[in-house]
Image (cartoon, rainbow, N blue to C red; front, side, top):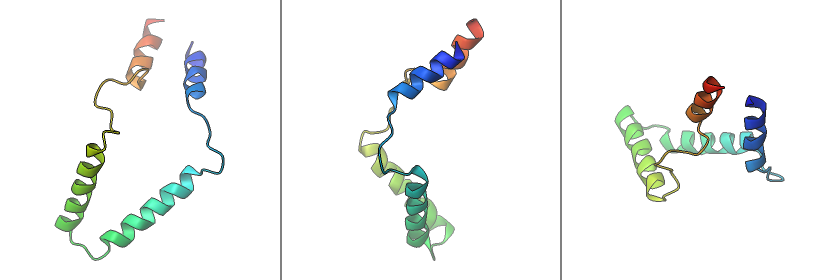
Length: 80
């Protein structure tokens, strides 16, 4: 049953040709590193707090229960 759940999960996400998650991760880390370079601890915390607020304002963050969340999958597996 678990393998079927994983197959269904994989079907939902499609690969985007030419997109590399690792490359994007490195670019974002480099950007952040250069932006916070020279800041003190308080300024860095403020930087991430503002970024978090900006992201939440986009509405892209799901605030409800996700369908087929990891917890839900584990509960289903225990029952079977």
